[in-house]
Length: 176
Image (cartoon, rainbow, N blue to C red; front, side, top):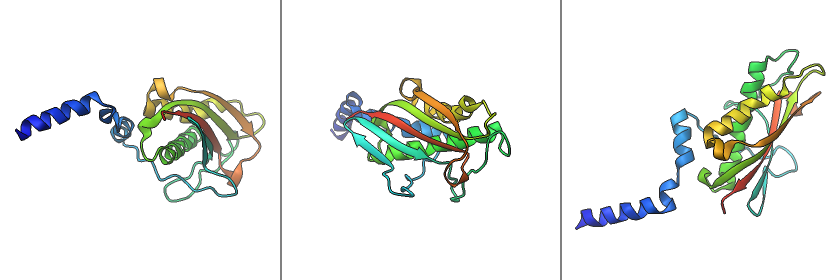
């Protein structure tokens, strides 16, 4: 009798959206990625703003687990691969803000709409898109191309806050 109840419950769960909960978390676990808690704002702004189903995420900087920052200027003292790694870390922090905004359920992310990438670089540096690919590739890897592929811009700046190499913001559509 208990087995029959358990089977009925299992079938009900399979037919509901409950089974889908945790798909993104499973993918993160398979990739060996831990998403840190969302960073608090460092000044007078909000880390994200939700308006209807849209989530506007403030610029995220490449902060490592030990709270050190990935600092540098592309085109002088920072290599392209280092810039891509910094952009990927910004993507990790974008997902952290998404997770906070969704109450911990990343499956509520319906679509990553836009990534806004800023690269600290010299005036003759031209590989901004390759740097920001670090974030774009990460989001597609985590959410799949259907949800993670997005529009974006990648621009160069003469400096960024705290001397970081990259800063990335985003716009996301949520389910509810």
